[in-house]
Length: 417
Image 1 (cartoon, rainbow, N blue to C red):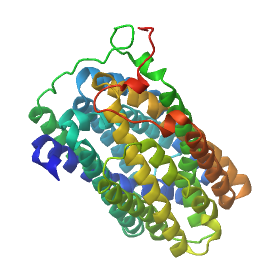
Image 2 (image 1 turned 180 degrees about the horizontal axis):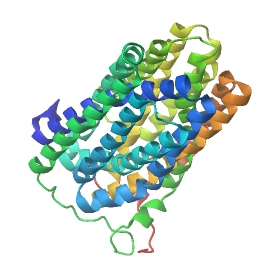
Image 3 (image 1 turned 135 degrees about the vertical axis):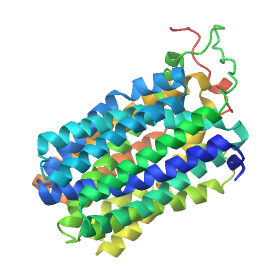
């Protein structure tokens, strides 16, 4: 709880809790609204693709802006844009004027705002906390996020049934406004962090982004993150709601319960990871905990009713949360602070950037082969990524050093600008 001593971190934590609570509602309201009123899984996949493309395209821009203008400024602007986009969902759902092209345009704006937001949200925690409180800060941010996403989908399912999608979207829009106010407070409260000296490469020049991206550990992270998200995003965004509405014959509240199970697993995993001392080789541990998720995801649609499916989701996402927290903290400790936003943007381009591809593939597979078929395919890509990581000696032996590039992973001798 040491990070809570810092006023700016408390404001950030409160804003993220509220905003992510609204997002949990939106995650249920959007797919159920599309599936119930406008079309099937293929249209849902198309709308999510329209959301994912600008989200991906602006990750690099968001990372650069975060390093140049400070992350909380970028987060504030992005949340205002996303709040307006969700407000447009409110209007279209309430008036009944929404069609596929209208929903697609709104999704593009929403995705663009999130593309700017994501790199800044990763870079802001090291900017607000000292290095020895970084893992605790990451755990608090992640834990409150999962707590809100645990309650959000469950409430979202009930709201869709009781008051309809328009009011559900309105609640999400309100949470963006509250989050923007807290980020404005962070911007006023937080002093500019002390700039640390760039680590140098063997040529004696400051380490650049291209130096860091040339490291084998970063290249492997780019490839394996892309594989993991290629399989998992389509599963959670398209195949799971289609499975719930189709073969499982659940109502919106039942799908909300499954979404809440994913949030519960992430929350449990974050609590477990926060109590684990900093691992000497965190990437090795993150890969080892990923392996058991492969059979869990593959058998989910064949394991029985929704209760069994919820238990499987809790177990799988508990393991995913442990691995994610270890990996994120290691990256923040290893990367030069002045490059963290841009490096995060590039890494997110490989992971989050898979969303439009994954959701479109999932929409096609679900449409022509049924939702059950997608789960073993998605699990296979996760398994391939974990095996690739564990067979790399560089990955297994990686040891971050706080705030610098360690000698073992020093950038190449040629300075590239």
